[in-house]
Image (cartoon, rainbow, N blue to C red; front, side):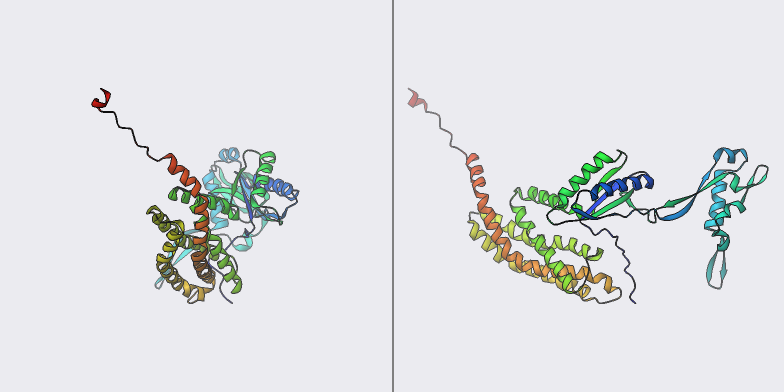
Amino acid sequence: MPAPPSLATSFRSSPIDYVLQADSYDELNKATGVMIGEASKLGYLINVDTDLRLNKPQLDINIDRERASGLGASVAEIGGTLETLLGGRVVTNFKRGTKQYDVILQMKPAARSKPGVIDGIYIRGTGGLVQLANVVKVQETLAPKELNHYNRIRSAAITANLLPGKTIGVALDDLDRIAQEKLPPTVKREYAGQSLFLLAVVFIYLVLSAQFESFIHPLTILLSVPLAVFGALLTLFIFGQSLNIYSQIGLIMLIGLVTKNSILIVEFSNQLRAQGQTIAEAVIQAATIRLRPILMTSFATIFGVLPIAIGLGAGAESRRPLGLAVVGGLFFSTFLTLVLVPVVYTLLARFGRVELAGLEERTELRPVEEPAHAEELV
């Protein structure tokens, strides 16, 4: 039986991943119950669920500080006693041969498993030994099995799937409206998982727009991203691999690799157009000249990741989805990018040429009339 992967994935694979944050898990439990009930009424969200499960029984031990102080028992001593007897504490160590062993002081497992174990524990007070049950209150509660945090704050995620015809943006708007109307202001909201994908694409588009000083050319560059993602998903499907954390890392790597090819063609085409060439001449020459460096870098990356995709070495089963995503997506997008990017660039450049011509007309320098000579004024 192969060993389990070293990186585990959560169940958050749904398109909707809505994160709630609060100071306590009890408050989060109430908030998630309200959100799940209201989200299920929307009609287009199915399999609405949360990762917060209050199903782990535990004993809460609360110290009566006034009574403990009156009996001369400090909070530190009470906590240290419970830690030692129930949790275990290393008190010393010894050597046997060349190995060193820790000596752990702890109650026997049979004694620790009894609910009334607190009644048999005594601590030292000012007047002698004090029974621990006299200074603490024990309460049986339910706690979450996993203590999830998002940005170092206690959190609970609400996940859901979408029915056909609805978008993630519409669902997030409805969830925001429900949270604003039904939840207290102490509960904060965040997006996570696939819900952030649209925001990430918009951010990349704005960065490229600032770099190229155009809102048209980034559309051409981002065209390679869906091609690469489609190629990666198709490769994973053919080889029977799942979309897990390793393949998702491969998709992130893939986006940076494939956009580089589009940037090479678009940037060089802009330089040639600035030298006076037409749109068709510039894009054909740019695609021709940049063909070899694009193929060289792409195939160098493919052959470099190929051993991971084949699955060589120890632990290859877990790394194989990463390699397959990169190899399949890069191979698929490289050839389509060389065809589609010049075509789309030509269409979008012609679409934006009217705006560019208007800008050049407004910034054209007009000759200044020379002043008349003195002889002409006479």
